[in-house]
Amino acid sequence: MMRLTWTCLLTLVLVTAACEAPGEEPVPAEEAVPALKEVFADAFLVGAALNPDQFYGRDTLGVALITKHFNTITPENVMKWEQIHPEPDRYDFEAADRFVAFGEERDLFIVGHTLVWHNQTPDWVFEDDRGEPLTREALLERMRDHIQTVVGRYRGRVDGWDVVNEALNEDGTLRPTRWLEIIGEDYLAHAFRFAHEADPQAELYYNDYSLTNPAKREGAVRLVQGLLDAGVPVTGIGMQGHYALTYPTLEELETSITTFAGLGVDVMITELDVAVLPRPSEYWGADVTRREELRAELDPYREAFPDSMQQALADRYADFFEVFLRQQEALTRVTFWGVTDGDSWLNNWPIRGRTSYPLLFDRAYRPKPAFFAVVATARE
Ligand code: 9MR
Image (cartoon, rainbow, N blue to C red; front, side, top):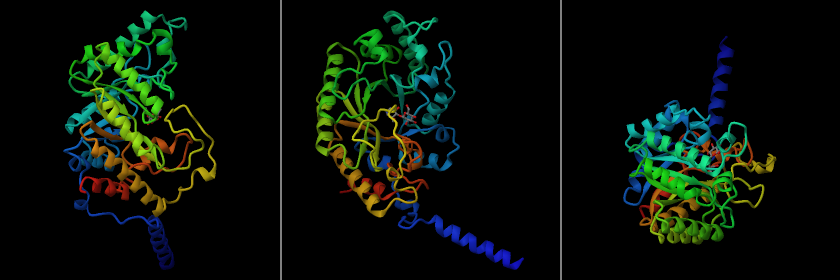
Protein backbone atom coordinates (compact mmCIF):
# COMPACT_ATOMS: atom_id res chain seq x y z
CA MET A 1 0.00 0.00 0.00
CA MET A 2 2.77 2.35 1.05
CA ARG A 3 4.75 1.58 -2.12
CA LEU A 4 1.72 2.29 -4.26
CA THR A 5 1.25 5.64 -2.58
CA TRP A 6 4.87 6.64 -3.20
CA THR A 7 4.59 5.56 -6.82
CA CYS A 8 1.50 7.70 -7.19
CA LEU A 9 3.25 10.64 -5.59
CA LEU A 10 6.25 10.26 -7.84
CA THR A 11 4.01 10.07 -10.88
CA LEU A 12 2.24 13.21 -9.75
CA VAL A 13 5.51 15.08 -9.38
CA LEU A 14 6.70 13.96 -12.81
CA VAL A 15 3.41 14.85 -14.47
CA THR A 16 3.36 18.24 -12.79
CA ALA A 17 6.93 18.91 -13.90
CA ALA A 18 6.03 17.95 -17.45
CA CYS A 19 3.28 20.56 -17.47
CA GLU A 20 5.91 23.25 -17.00
CA ALA A 21 7.17 23.14 -20.54
CA PRO A 22 10.80 24.22 -20.87
CA GLY A 23 11.27 27.85 -21.74
CA GLU A 24 7.85 29.00 -20.54
CA GLU A 25 7.76 32.16 -18.50
CA PRO A 26 6.73 31.92 -14.86
CA VAL A 27 3.27 33.35 -14.23
CA PRO A 28 3.73 37.09 -13.66
CA ALA A 29 2.19 38.67 -10.57
CA GLU A 30 -1.23 40.07 -11.45
CA GLU A 31 -0.22 43.64 -10.65
CA ALA A 32 2.68 43.36 -13.12
CA VAL A 33 0.18 42.81 -15.93
CA PRO A 34 -1.35 46.13 -17.00
CA ALA A 35 -4.74 46.24 -18.73
CA LEU A 36 -4.34 46.72 -22.48
CA LYS A 37 -7.37 49.03 -22.64
CA GLU A 38 -5.71 51.32 -20.11
CA VAL A 39 -2.27 51.18 -21.72
CA PHE A 40 -3.77 52.36 -25.03
CA ALA A 41 -6.59 54.49 -23.59
CA ASP A 42 -5.32 57.68 -25.22
CA ALA A 43 -4.70 56.01 -28.58
CA PHE A 44 -7.51 53.63 -29.61
CA LEU A 45 -9.93 51.02 -28.32
CA VAL A 46 -8.50 47.53 -27.87
CA GLY A 47 -10.71 44.52 -28.44
CA ALA A 48 -11.15 40.87 -29.20
CA ALA A 49 -13.41 38.57 -31.17
CA LEU A 50 -15.45 36.39 -28.82
CA ASN A 51 -16.82 32.85 -29.00
CA PRO A 52 -19.86 31.46 -27.13
CA ASP A 53 -17.80 29.82 -24.36
CA GLN A 54 -16.73 33.32 -23.41
CA PHE A 55 -19.99 35.27 -23.63
CA TYR A 56 -22.00 32.46 -22.02
CA GLY A 57 -19.46 32.54 -19.19
CA ARG A 58 -18.27 28.90 -19.46
CA ASP A 59 -14.68 29.99 -20.15
CA THR A 60 -14.27 31.79 -16.83
CA LEU A 61 -10.56 32.50 -17.27
CA GLY A 62 -11.24 33.88 -20.73
CA VAL A 63 -13.99 36.11 -19.32
CA ALA A 64 -11.55 37.46 -16.72
CA LEU A 65 -9.06 38.39 -19.46
CA ILE A 66 -11.74 40.04 -21.60
CA THR A 67 -13.13 42.01 -18.66
CA LYS A 68 -9.69 43.24 -17.68
CA HIS A 69 -8.08 44.00 -21.02
CA PHE A 70 -10.64 44.91 -23.67
CA ASN A 71 -13.11 47.74 -24.20
CA THR A 72 -14.56 46.52 -27.49
CA ILE A 73 -15.82 43.12 -28.66
CA THR A 74 -16.82 41.50 -31.95
CA PRO A 75 -18.69 38.18 -32.26
CA GLU A 76 -16.48 35.69 -34.10
CA ASN A 77 -19.40 33.83 -35.71
CA VAL A 78 -22.82 34.20 -34.06
CA MET A 79 -24.05 37.17 -36.09
CA LYS A 80 -23.15 35.64 -39.45
CA TRP A 81 -26.16 35.04 -41.70
CA GLU A 82 -26.26 31.22 -41.42
CA GLN A 83 -26.35 31.45 -37.63
CA ILE A 84 -28.61 34.43 -36.99
CA HIS A 85 -30.99 33.79 -39.93
CA PRO A 86 -30.76 30.07 -40.70
CA GLU A 87 -34.05 29.72 -42.61
CA PRO A 88 -36.14 32.16 -44.66
CA ASP A 89 -38.71 32.76 -41.96
CA ARG A 90 -36.60 32.04 -38.91
CA TYR A 91 -34.12 34.25 -37.11
CA ASP A 92 -32.17 32.81 -34.17
CA PHE A 93 -31.09 35.63 -31.89
CA GLU A 94 -30.27 33.64 -28.80
CA ALA A 95 -26.47 33.67 -29.00
CA ALA A 96 -26.31 37.17 -30.48
CA ASP A 97 -28.52 38.48 -27.67
CA ARG A 98 -26.18 36.94 -25.09
CA PHE A 99 -23.15 38.43 -26.87
CA VAL A 100 -24.69 41.91 -26.82
CA ALA A 101 -25.75 41.53 -23.17
CA PHE A 102 -22.17 40.48 -22.28
CA GLY A 103 -20.90 43.69 -23.83
CA GLU A 104 -23.51 45.86 -22.14
CA GLU A 105 -22.82 44.31 -18.74
CA ARG A 106 -19.23 45.55 -19.12
CA ASP A 107 -19.99 48.78 -20.95
CA LEU A 108 -17.99 47.73 -24.01
CA PHE A 109 -18.05 49.16 -27.55
CA ILE A 110 -19.95 46.44 -29.41
CA VAL A 111 -19.26 45.62 -33.05
CA GLY A 112 -21.64 43.54 -35.17
CA HIS A 113 -20.04 41.14 -37.67
CA THR A 114 -21.22 40.81 -40.41
CA LEU A 115 -24.32 41.70 -42.46
CA VAL A 116 -23.43 40.99 -46.11
CA TRP A 117 -20.80 38.39 -46.98
CA HIS A 118 -20.39 35.59 -49.52
CA ASN A 119 -19.34 32.99 -46.92
CA GLN A 120 -21.52 31.48 -44.21
CA THR A 121 -24.58 32.65 -46.11
CA PRO A 122 -27.06 29.87 -46.94
CA ASP A 123 -27.85 29.13 -50.60
CA TRP A 124 -31.57 29.79 -50.03
CA VAL A 125 -30.76 33.47 -49.58
CA PHE A 126 -30.22 33.73 -53.32
CA GLU A 127 -33.04 31.42 -54.44
CA ASP A 128 -36.81 31.39 -54.66
CA ASP A 129 -39.11 28.58 -53.44
CA ARG A 130 -38.31 26.50 -56.51
CA GLY A 131 -34.55 26.89 -56.14
CA GLU A 132 -34.33 29.38 -59.02
CA PRO A 133 -32.09 32.47 -58.65
CA LEU A 134 -33.92 35.46 -57.21
CA THR A 135 -34.46 38.59 -59.26
CA ARG A 136 -32.50 41.73 -58.36
CA GLU A 137 -35.58 43.24 -56.72
CA ALA A 138 -36.34 40.13 -54.68
CA LEU A 139 -32.76 39.79 -53.45
CA LEU A 140 -32.62 43.47 -52.53
CA GLU A 141 -35.83 43.00 -50.57
CA ARG A 142 -34.37 39.98 -48.78
CA MET A 143 -31.18 41.90 -47.99
CA ARG A 144 -33.25 44.80 -46.66
CA ASP A 145 -35.32 42.52 -44.47
CA HIS A 146 -32.21 40.82 -43.05
CA ILE A 147 -30.25 44.00 -42.39
CA GLN A 148 -33.16 45.91 -40.92
CA THR A 149 -34.28 43.02 -38.73
CA VAL A 150 -30.80 42.43 -37.32
CA VAL A 151 -29.61 46.02 -37.06
CA GLY A 152 -33.06 47.12 -35.88
CA ARG A 153 -33.07 44.59 -33.05
CA TYR A 154 -29.81 45.98 -31.66
CA ARG A 155 -30.45 49.64 -32.52
CA GLY A 156 -28.66 51.87 -30.02
CA ARG A 157 -26.91 48.83 -28.48
CA VAL A 158 -24.50 47.61 -31.17
CA ASP A 159 -22.21 50.57 -31.82
CA GLY A 160 -20.80 49.68 -35.22
CA TRP A 161 -21.42 47.12 -37.98
CA ASP A 162 -19.23 45.36 -40.51
CA VAL A 163 -21.85 46.01 -43.17
CA VAL A 164 -20.08 44.38 -46.10
CA ASN A 165 -17.26 41.90 -45.65
CA GLU A 166 -14.60 40.90 -48.19
CA ALA A 167 -16.16 42.26 -51.39
CA LEU A 168 -12.84 42.67 -53.21
CA ASN A 169 -10.58 40.36 -55.19
CA GLU A 170 -6.84 40.53 -54.67
CA ASP A 171 -6.49 42.69 -57.80
CA GLY A 172 -8.88 45.26 -56.38
CA THR A 173 -11.85 44.41 -58.61
CA LEU A 174 -15.20 43.41 -57.12
CA ARG A 175 -15.38 39.76 -56.10
CA PRO A 176 -17.84 37.76 -58.23
CA THR A 177 -20.30 36.80 -55.49
CA ARG A 178 -23.99 36.05 -55.87
CA TRP A 179 -24.68 39.48 -54.38
CA LEU A 180 -22.79 41.08 -57.27
CA GLU A 181 -24.11 38.68 -59.88
CA ILE A 182 -27.79 39.17 -59.02
CA ILE A 183 -27.99 42.75 -57.73
CA GLY A 184 -25.08 44.42 -59.51
CA GLU A 185 -22.36 46.76 -58.26
CA ASP A 186 -24.73 48.88 -56.22
CA TYR A 187 -25.39 46.04 -53.76
CA LEU A 188 -22.89 47.62 -51.38
CA ALA A 189 -24.57 51.03 -51.51
CA HIS A 190 -27.92 49.43 -50.75
CA ALA A 191 -26.49 47.44 -47.82
CA PHE A 192 -25.07 50.57 -46.19
CA ARG A 193 -28.28 52.54 -46.77
CA PHE A 194 -30.45 49.79 -45.28
CA ALA A 195 -28.21 49.63 -42.22
CA HIS A 196 -28.25 53.40 -41.79
CA GLU A 197 -32.06 53.46 -41.97
CA ALA A 198 -32.24 50.81 -39.27
CA ASP A 199 -29.84 52.62 -36.91
CA PRO A 200 -28.79 56.13 -37.95
CA GLN A 201 -26.37 56.38 -35.01
CA ALA A 202 -24.42 53.18 -35.73
CA GLU A 203 -20.98 53.33 -37.32
CA LEU A 204 -20.91 51.42 -40.61
CA TYR A 205 -17.77 49.74 -41.93
CA TYR A 206 -16.39 48.10 -45.03
CA ASN A 207 -14.18 45.22 -43.77
CA ASP A 208 -11.61 43.17 -45.72
CA TYR A 209 -8.28 41.34 -45.57
CA SER A 210 -5.03 41.95 -47.52
CA LEU A 211 -5.79 45.67 -47.66
CA THR A 212 -2.06 46.29 -47.37
CA ASN A 213 -1.52 44.87 -50.88
CA PRO A 214 -1.26 47.84 -53.27
CA ALA A 215 -3.80 46.61 -55.83
CA LYS A 216 -6.36 45.71 -53.20
CA ARG A 217 -5.71 48.97 -51.34
CA GLU A 218 -6.43 50.89 -54.55
CA GLY A 219 -9.56 48.81 -55.09
CA ALA A 220 -10.78 49.68 -51.58
CA VAL A 221 -10.07 53.36 -52.22
CA ARG A 222 -12.09 53.29 -55.46
CA LEU A 223 -14.90 51.39 -53.76
CA VAL A 224 -15.19 53.55 -50.66
CA GLN A 225 -14.60 56.84 -52.49
CA GLY A 226 -17.33 55.86 -54.94
CA LEU A 227 -19.73 55.15 -52.08
CA LEU A 228 -18.89 58.42 -50.34
CA ASP A 229 -19.31 60.38 -53.60
CA ALA A 230 -22.78 58.87 -53.93
CA GLY A 231 -23.64 59.99 -50.40
CA VAL A 232 -23.61 56.44 -48.98
CA PRO A 233 -23.07 56.48 -45.20
CA VAL A 234 -19.75 54.60 -44.82
CA THR A 235 -18.00 55.64 -41.61
CA GLY A 236 -14.96 53.40 -41.57
CA ILE A 237 -12.67 50.87 -43.22
CA GLY A 238 -11.81 47.76 -41.23
CA MET A 239 -8.43 46.31 -42.11
CA GLN A 240 -8.51 42.66 -41.04
CA GLY A 241 -5.05 42.24 -39.58
CA HIS A 242 -4.41 38.62 -40.49
CA TYR A 243 -0.67 39.13 -40.59
CA ALA A 244 2.45 36.98 -40.27
CA LEU A 245 6.07 37.26 -39.22
CA THR A 246 7.08 38.40 -42.71
CA TYR A 247 3.82 39.81 -44.09
CA PRO A 248 2.93 42.59 -44.69
CA THR A 249 5.77 45.10 -44.75
CA LEU A 250 5.39 47.86 -42.18
CA GLU A 251 5.56 50.39 -45.02
CA GLU A 252 2.58 48.85 -46.84
CA LEU A 253 0.66 48.73 -43.56
CA GLU A 254 1.29 52.36 -42.78
CA THR A 255 0.57 53.46 -46.35
CA SER A 256 -2.82 51.76 -46.24
CA ILE A 257 -3.74 53.37 -42.93
CA THR A 258 -2.79 56.86 -44.11
CA THR A 259 -4.40 56.37 -47.53
CA PHE A 260 -7.71 55.23 -46.04
CA ALA A 261 -7.66 57.99 -43.43
CA GLY A 262 -7.16 60.41 -46.32
CA LEU A 263 -10.65 59.49 -47.56
CA GLY A 264 -12.02 61.06 -44.40
CA VAL A 265 -13.25 57.79 -42.82
CA ASP A 266 -12.18 56.05 -39.63
CA VAL A 267 -9.67 53.23 -39.97
CA MET A 268 -9.50 50.22 -37.69
CA ILE A 269 -7.50 47.02 -37.38
CA THR A 270 -10.33 44.54 -37.01
CA GLU A 271 -9.01 40.98 -36.93
CA LEU A 272 -5.46 41.08 -35.68
CA ASP A 273 -3.34 37.95 -35.34
CA VAL A 274 0.19 37.05 -36.40
CA ALA A 275 0.60 33.63 -38.00
CA VAL A 276 3.77 31.83 -36.96
CA LEU A 277 3.40 28.41 -38.56
CA PRO A 278 4.96 27.48 -41.90
CA ARG A 279 2.74 28.44 -44.86
CA PRO A 280 1.77 25.61 -47.20
CA SER A 281 1.77 28.13 -50.05
CA GLU A 282 2.58 31.75 -50.75
CA TYR A 283 -1.05 32.77 -50.25
CA TRP A 284 -1.29 35.55 -47.64
CA GLY A 285 -5.01 36.26 -47.67
CA ALA A 286 -7.66 34.95 -45.27
CA ASP A 287 -10.12 33.18 -47.57
CA VAL A 288 -11.75 30.70 -45.17
CA THR A 289 -12.64 28.28 -47.96
CA ARG A 290 -8.98 27.49 -48.70
CA ARG A 291 -7.88 24.14 -47.29
CA GLU A 292 -4.54 22.32 -47.27
CA GLU A 293 -3.38 18.86 -46.14
CA LEU A 294 -1.61 18.37 -42.80
CA ARG A 295 2.07 17.40 -43.04
CA ALA A 296 4.25 17.10 -39.93
CA GLU A 297 6.69 19.79 -41.07
CA LEU A 298 3.79 22.25 -41.26
CA ASP A 299 3.01 21.77 -37.55
CA PRO A 300 6.41 22.06 -35.86
CA TYR A 301 5.42 23.47 -32.45
CA ARG A 302 2.90 20.91 -31.23
CA GLU A 303 4.75 20.38 -27.95
CA ALA A 304 6.18 23.82 -27.26
CA PHE A 305 6.87 27.17 -28.87
CA PRO A 306 10.64 27.86 -28.79
CA ASP A 307 11.99 30.96 -27.07
CA SER A 308 13.43 32.20 -30.33
CA MET A 309 9.97 32.15 -31.89
CA GLN A 310 8.39 33.81 -28.85
CA GLN A 311 10.92 36.58 -29.30
CA ALA A 312 10.31 36.86 -33.04
CA LEU A 313 6.57 37.14 -32.38
CA ALA A 314 7.14 39.74 -29.65
CA ASP A 315 9.36 41.82 -31.95
CA ARG A 316 6.82 41.62 -34.75
CA TYR A 317 3.94 42.69 -32.50
CA ALA A 318 6.04 45.58 -31.19
CA ASP A 319 6.72 46.68 -34.78
CA PHE A 320 3.00 46.63 -35.58
CA PHE A 321 2.03 48.54 -32.46
CA GLU A 322 4.66 51.18 -33.15
CA VAL A 323 2.92 51.79 -36.48
CA PHE A 324 -0.51 51.76 -34.80
CA LEU A 325 0.60 54.27 -32.18
CA ARG A 326 2.15 56.53 -34.82
CA GLN A 327 -1.17 56.38 -36.67
CA GLN A 328 -3.40 56.78 -33.63
CA GLU A 329 -5.11 59.83 -35.09
CA ALA A 330 -6.39 57.64 -37.93
CA LEU A 331 -7.07 54.45 -35.97
CA THR A 332 -10.11 54.16 -33.74
CA ARG A 333 -9.70 50.53 -32.72
CA VAL A 334 -7.41 47.49 -32.71
CA THR A 335 -9.29 44.20 -32.30
CA PHE A 336 -7.56 40.83 -31.92
CA TRP A 337 -9.18 37.83 -33.61
CA GLY A 338 -9.48 35.78 -30.43
CA VAL A 339 -8.28 36.06 -26.83
CA THR A 340 -5.84 33.18 -26.25
CA ASP A 341 -3.85 31.04 -28.68
CA GLY A 342 -6.23 28.18 -27.97
CA ASP A 343 -9.17 30.19 -29.34
CA SER A 344 -7.62 31.10 -32.66
CA TRP A 345 -9.07 30.09 -36.04
CA LEU A 346 -5.42 29.65 -37.12
CA ASN A 347 -5.33 26.31 -35.28
CA ASN A 348 -7.70 25.10 -38.01
CA TRP A 349 -6.92 27.14 -41.10
CA PRO A 350 -5.77 26.50 -43.74
CA ILE A 351 -4.98 23.11 -42.16
CA ARG A 352 -7.15 21.57 -39.46
CA GLY A 353 -5.70 20.59 -36.09
CA ARG A 354 -2.40 22.50 -35.95
CA THR A 355 -1.04 24.23 -32.86
CA SER A 356 -0.63 27.91 -33.53
CA TYR A 357 0.55 30.81 -31.36
CA PRO A 358 -0.77 33.98 -32.98
CA LEU A 359 -2.14 36.04 -30.06
CA LEU A 360 -0.93 37.79 -26.89
CA PHE A 361 -2.18 35.21 -24.35
CA ASP A 362 -1.13 31.55 -24.29
CA ARG A 363 -3.30 28.47 -23.89
CA ALA A 364 -2.96 28.74 -20.11
CA TYR A 365 -4.34 32.33 -20.23
CA ARG A 366 -0.92 33.80 -19.41
CA PRO A 367 0.40 36.93 -21.11
CA LYS A 368 3.19 36.02 -23.54
CA PRO A 369 6.40 37.96 -24.21
CA ALA A 370 4.46 39.51 -27.13
CA PHE A 371 2.01 40.99 -24.62
CA PHE A 372 4.79 42.75 -22.73
CA ALA A 373 6.41 43.89 -25.97
CA VAL A 374 3.13 45.49 -27.03
CA VAL A 375 2.74 47.21 -23.65
CA ALA A 376 6.31 48.49 -23.89
CA THR A 377 5.59 50.31 -27.17
CA ALA A 378 3.18 52.60 -25.32
CA ARG A 379 5.75 53.38 -22.66
CA GLU A 380 8.70 54.25 -24.86
O1 9MR B 1 -12.81 32.96 -36.96
C1 9MR B 1 -13.89 32.53 -37.74
C2 9MR B 1 -13.96 31.02 -37.75
O2 9MR B 1 -14.32 30.54 -36.46
C3 9MR B 1 -14.96 30.56 -38.77
O3 9MR B 1 -14.91 29.14 -38.87
C4 9MR B 1 -14.64 31.17 -40.10
C5 9MR B 1 -15.60 30.69 -41.14
O4 9MR B 1 -16.31 31.65 -41.76
O5 9MR B 1 -14.68 32.57 -39.99
C6 9MR B 1 -13.68 33.05 -39.15
O6 9MR B 1 -13.69 34.46 -39.10
C7 9MR B 1 -13.40 35.13 -40.33
C8 9MR B 1 -14.13 36.44 -40.30
O7 9MR B 1 -15.50 36.22 -40.09
C9 9MR B 1 -13.92 37.22 -41.58
N1 9MR B 1 -12.52 37.39 -41.87
C10 9MR B 1 -11.72 36.19 -41.83
C11 9MR B 1 -11.91 35.50 -40.48
C12 9MR B 1 -10.99 34.32 -40.35
O8 9MR B 1 -11.35 33.35 -41.27
